[in-house]
Length: 199
Image (cartoon, rainbow, N blue to C red; front, side, top):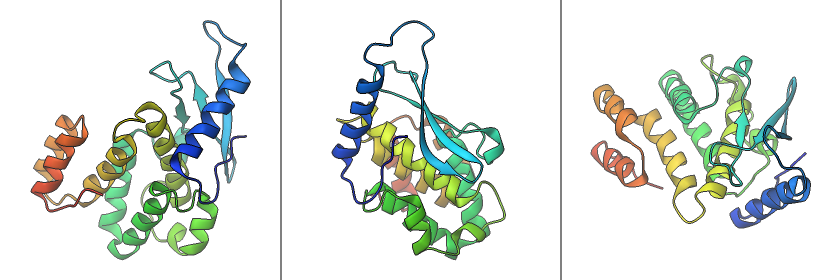
């Protein structure tokens, strides 16, 4: 189990996760070798990350079972889920965005503690995946972005992408963005058009 909890800085999270990979995997190499690490407790088991990921370095894949209601847990699937939640309950969505911000800023990495701060979030939305699931998956996607794009804006790109898709009011522009946004600068351009600030 790789546990990331409390107020732990981004570089310390990366160090802990990567050092775990090195410690466990250093002598077990070869084609077809797969490593799975439980990272979060879920109501019916665990959320796992698996290696190797797509990029074959310290990358990993967050394994999101279909029954959790997030498809495969891609960035677009999560963003669309958040968009539906924003349309369903704007007031509670701002709380959800604040909860995601806590994880993004690493001010609290324990999702269960964050949910205690926002006790009504889990019951606030009828659409899509449970808030607990979203927060735990997004937490590990942020960590993956830090590992793969350490010298760039990976974590910020994901956070702002989720916020943009949820809040974009122009459907045509949103569809264009989903087709064209591949880097932070392109996303910043779309966000500027609809008055959303990059954080």
